[in-house]
Amino acid sequence: MLKLQTNSALSAKTFQKYRTRIKKAEKVLAKMKYSEYRSLPYQDVEKLLKQIQKFKTGFSDIVIIGIGGSMLGTQMLYHILGESLQQNSNATPSRETKNKSKNPINKSIPKFHFIDNIDPTFIASLGEKLSDKKKTLFIFVSKSGNTLEIVSLFKLITGGAPKWFGKNWNNHIIIITENKKGFLYKKVTENNLSSFKMPKFVGGRYSILTAAGLIPTALMGLDIRKLLQGASHVEQSDSRKS
Image (cartoon, rainbow, N blue to C red; front, side, top):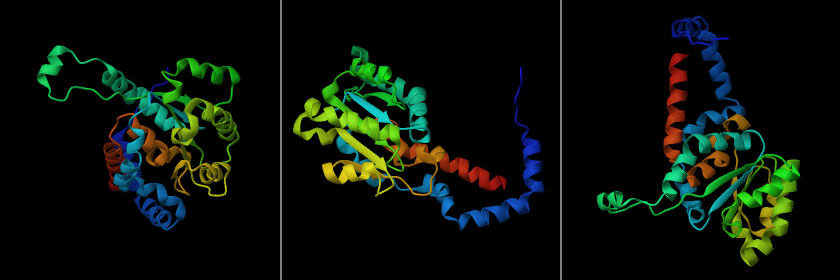
């Protein structure tokens, strides 16, 4: 079996050997628009948290629809941390817990579902997994707003939304995109949908630190301030090494 290990001494020696080149590369990168991802750990999320407050109650299920980096980071956090938090929040507090705490757990965290394909069998099975279709929130994530799978699923779900949710069906849809000329953004304007902007020059692998990852993460009950704090520690650590 192949065994991978990190040799910190070797890493430090390598960094030291190429220190000048790395510093020069960092200065060049800092001047480029594509370095926008480096500022993500230091963003202020207080406004974002206020904007999504209305989505923290009234939903039994949240469906995230995206491809690749637009969804994978969020999916990872949910299965590692959010899923257990959701199960604990939905558990009935014991008599002992009630006696010890003046504020027992009484706020349920929605169950999350993730869609990254248009397989008809998979899509058809989603309805059986939802706790309550009428209390479901759909979050569509596409930087371009034109991703074929996302557009197809948007048309499918919004086609049935008025029947499921009534005249206020648009309150069950969130769009996260960057391109104002894209299909999804046009639908935001036409239907008065809630929308959040993704940074233009941030690639998929860093999307977890943008609205694409922060909004679902906050809705699953995790502290996004701590998530960003952890990212900043890593970024600072890498800077010190170089």
